Picture 1 (cartoon, rainbow, N blue to C red):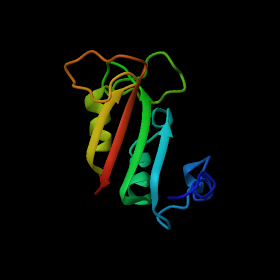
Picture 2: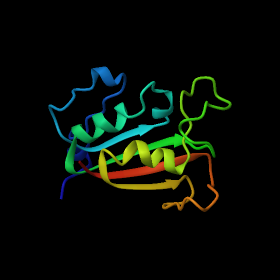
Picture 3: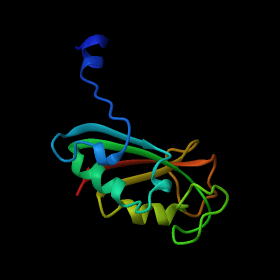
Length: 130
């Protein structure tokens, strides 16, 4: 069993622009992105890069604010958000890149599209990159 010090040495954090991400040269066990995708001109770039950069048994965690609008509608409220996502819109962006996409909210681990969301953000777990 590894010590905490040994585990921390194996953690690599990349903070900043996706253009600086060492794309496709290394496989990562865990990739996270919290409250980023809604700011991108092309939101599909994020799951594309994550799916091609993660290990086959890796996991991609992300969150985005939710809205009861589709991803095709103009944003409401925050002028820095280029997209808003309902459950279906978020699934449509992620499913082309992952075989398993589990969508929940801050207070629910799984979500069904017929249930009113709780919290302020979608929390998503993606596995099995295509």
